[in-house]
Length: 231
Image 1 (cartoon, rainbow, N blue to C red):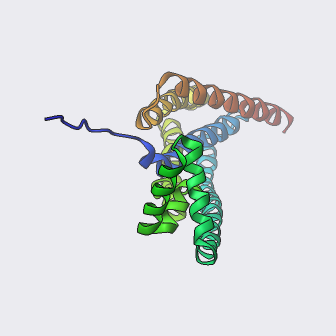
Image 2 (cartoon, one colour):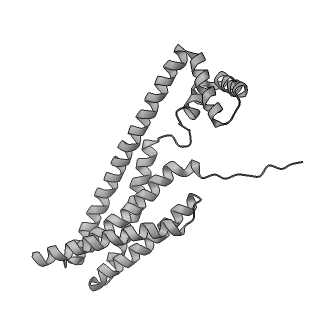
Image 3 (cartoon, rainbow, N blue to C red):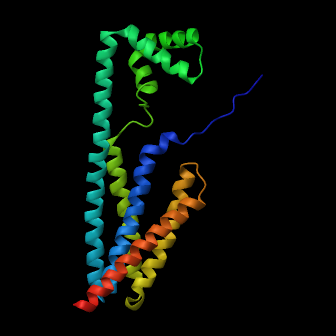
């Protein structure tokens, strides 16, 4: 007897995984960059912690609001497309069957089989068939605004807390170096974890996020140094 092998695909994770990785990455990069920039201006530990904490709270709220609005817009578009498809199915189901069959023909089925498949799928759930194959709306990738917003805010906060922890445990004279070095390590690990969770190779994402994090901190450190000298 032939045994079916289990298949584990990562597409079910794509919605929350994207928001979570983006949130944590932004939390580390933005907070570490803020801390490095303020520290470069020769501020005290309390000033640096205050700036970093303010950046954490503001960033988490901004991430949650931005993600919610963005994903809600996607959801609104999906719902509008589905409503339009419902009207078309009621108005001319035969034309909609031809349209669905045409999609299957372009994928490689012969005309008779394509119409048979379209007819059977539409008999079961016409809207679901058109949503998936015509509109490209899948249940596992459909927009979930609240989930995305919560994931972004939470992971941003966790990511932002890491550079703040480095400020607390580092000697004042070495805050900039400690925050920068530890944040680059965090980013590399985050990039690798995100890639592994999504089933992709880890090296390239780790290098990518580390490079952009290093660039962001270098720019803010330079600006902080210039401002510190000017004032």
